[in-house]
Amino acid sequence: MARRAKSGARAGIERFIDLTGRATSWLALVIVVVMATNVLLRYLFSAGTVWAQELEWHLLAPLILFGMSYALLHGEHVRVDVLYVHFSPRKKLYVDLLSAALSVAISVIIIWLSLKYVQQSYVIDEQSSDPGGLPYRWLLKALIPIGFIFLILQSLALALGTLEKLKALRK
Image 1 (cartoon, rainbow, N blue to C red):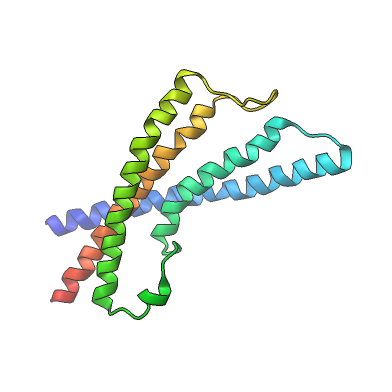
Image 2 (image 1 turned 180 degrees about the vertical axis):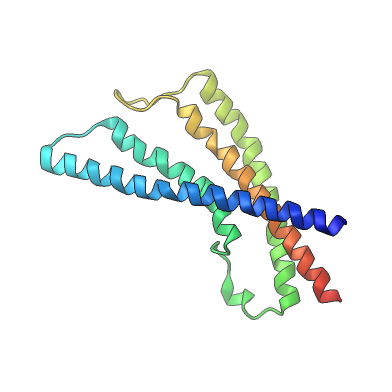
């Protein structure tokens, strides 16, 4: 019964991360359109706006922050395959488990450190320092702890899957 609960939790987390990642991936298209529009306006009409230029990196932040857990889910994260490829299946699983644990630890630290950063931005109602720039900078900064919460969730799902595979190897 306990094994089913873990598998169910893992499956739920992975569905959530996959759905979030797929939805967020559409931001890449929006970024391309915004950048192309900015370039065309700048070079063809000598026109442009500060808010449109800032929008580029305001869209890039959630793409990266939510995309990292999606990449981990689909095995597209960076790994030192030069060493990993030569490991036995059991050693690979232990490396995956250690990586998941380190990912959780680092994410917790980043969340802890970013909370005051986000709070300060919210309290002062931080906005762009450029005239015509985007307001609500705190909202963008709030994506930092949210993105790393997603990474913790996916790392836990990875750890659960790795533990299941290790148990299967023991049998």
